[in-house]
Image (cartoon, rainbow, N blue to C red; front, side):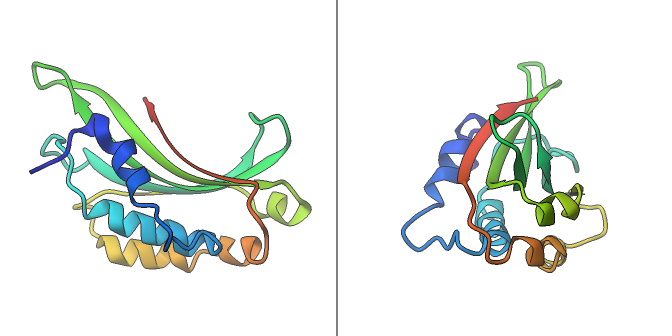
Length: 151
């Protein structure tokens, strides 16, 4: 049975438990993505209806300068006639105080969708080996959030 897209953020939050290792951010994101990907949602049968985004960069919308490191699962929502209505984006996001090292890491965004030639595990391995790993090593996140938005 496939889960409803509207329940995706609750399902994602349920993946966190006492054994979740949030002290290694990129590894934690990869682990959460792997576990979250194993859960099916009621999305259309289209190649871009269920995909992932790995991203990081400076964020200016917080009260203090911040650097965000996150992974997003994007799920398509259809209206009652089967037409595209929106996307639900479930975000796993680490937020760091901005320092010179993180500011120098720049911005990065990398999407993955099934059927685009690269297996999900290969993409996750690339995420786990991203250069950002060395930039966040030894840094303590200010916050970790799981949230969703409709886009």
